Amino acid sequence: EAQVTQNPRYLITVTGKKLTVTCSQNMNHEYMSWYRQDPGLGLRQIYYSMNVEVTDKGDVPEGYKVSRKEKRNFPLILESPSPNQTSLYFCASSSVGQGARDGYTFGSGTRLTVV
Amino acid sequence: GQSLEQPSEVTAVEGAIVQINCTYQTSGFYGLSWYQQHDGGAPTFLSYNALDGLEETGRFSSFLSRSDSYGYLLLQELQMKDSASYFCASSGNTPLVFGKGTRLSVIA
Image (cartoon, rainbow over all chains, first blue to last red; front, side):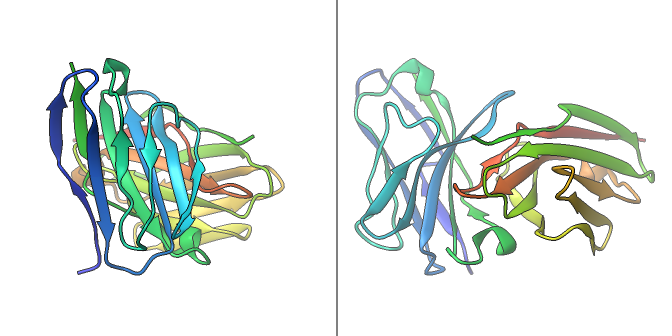
């Protein structure tokens, strides 16, 4: 089954404790992206990657890091989480050429709480 | 820059028709997409319009007017399960940018 897998689904952590949210896709997609979703603000892009070893900042990159060492994986790293990073996070992937036309495939989401 | 405007909430009666509008400002505009998201779920792709006109997929249709920077999603024969948030998203010189979403409530 074609899918984007995020882990964990739920995470509660303390301020300053480094964490990684994993994202993996099995569709051989070039494009991967991370979004955060907050009430009333919609989906805001954090970082995206057009292919292996190519990453770019989105609209809200502060406090986050990503890496794209393999095509299928795109982890999101919070080096020193703060309470304002409490949010619902989604990973998404698509093919580069037909991404918008065919639609992005989203993972199930990770609900992060930083206390 | 890029921005999209859509109503925050819409309420409609089961069996009726509802239209969710979206206006956009997008550099190098390619097309307009629509996504559905149920509470607690992930966004799922509904449609994409690159050319002016109406695209129909079952009960859902999507319209685009490039000259007016405007599009809409039309849902017919509303069902309770259509209660969800709907996002328009524009593609252009930068990756997909999403609107803030419209929460549709379908009432009996």
